[in-house]
Length: 91
Image 1 (cartoon, rainbow, N blue to C red):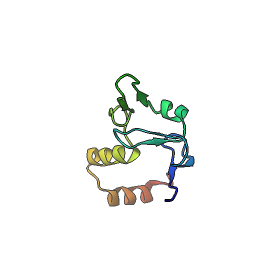
Image 2: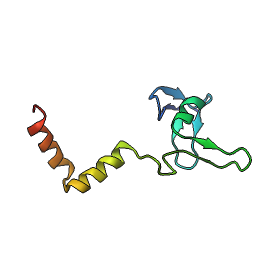
Image 3: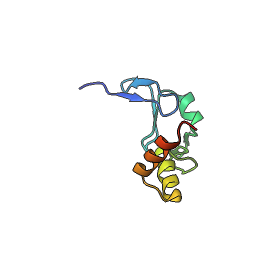
Image 4: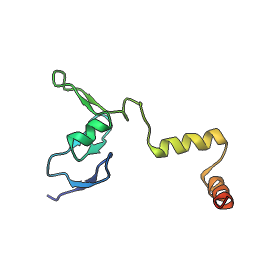
């Protein structure tokens, strides 16, 4: 049995899965501490045992999700965006 190292969704620090950490069982997001989890909107109801965070409640979205939507709205694919960026990054 080994130890897995995870990255905190909020601060980016790595931490082992053998110590205290917080995981949203709804979406799988992980945080190194209660403080980081709370900053990302993690909520746990002690009475019902229900938990959620801003990601699974769709109050916020990952950068990848936002980029995919932005590309769709612009009518571009990734390769077209790369070419656009290379042509315009010095301006």
